Image (tube, rainbow, N blue to C red; front, side):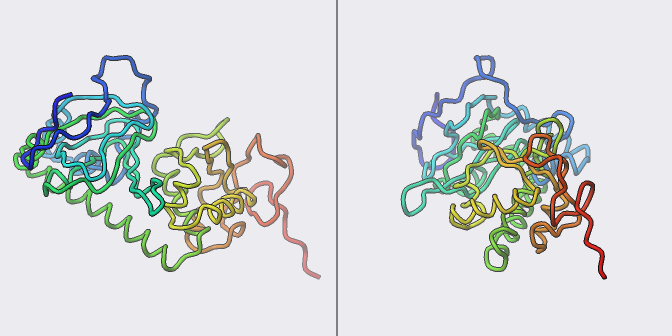
Length: 304
């Protein structure tokens, strides 16, 4: 692969193993067909604008660079690298991580299809601030720094859409920081699970609930909510015990999105406005559950 093109200091950078489209690669599992681009992504903001200038900018950026496919776990951007290229995700998800004090990767953020990755280094010529890896199969367009800056300068709608995208990320970050200083772990966890399921979730097994995407380990969830892995483990099982989620092998299914949102807003698990959708595979699926409202819930005892 040729070195990344950029206007900053020349540096060969790592040779990433992405493949040109057309080479064998399993089809990515996530993309825009049917549902459009997720809220807050660059392509969603261009589409939301809807003006002829914004649609022209969208068509132009989708023609920039080269289209590539990456498998799960492949490195897309390396922390502290001096490359200036930009990645536009077309399908799938990417995870941004940094090393913690013990040298293990700690999850910072998630980027979804329709979003751009690496735009900061392209704008300020500084080293990358995080490592970005594919969270499952990904297709993307790898755009040189020069082409990216030319696109931004040549389309007024492009700069506005990118600004809105960055404002959306800032609001998400602010909400996360507020949660870190004021909310219990179970409420923060409920917020993140509800957000991931609501924005990217797919129908769960047999149509029960929403499967959270991308798949995250408990360590990654712990980094996302700013808590210890053991505490997140207990919080997950607390939510599962109240029928709000179902846990599987690296898979979490939200059975009651309204109930999870109620916990995120401050309610105690099991006291939300809605009970879970019936989980055909869960234990006690044919029995009413205590502490939950909705169909199948145990009615309150009559007062004397």
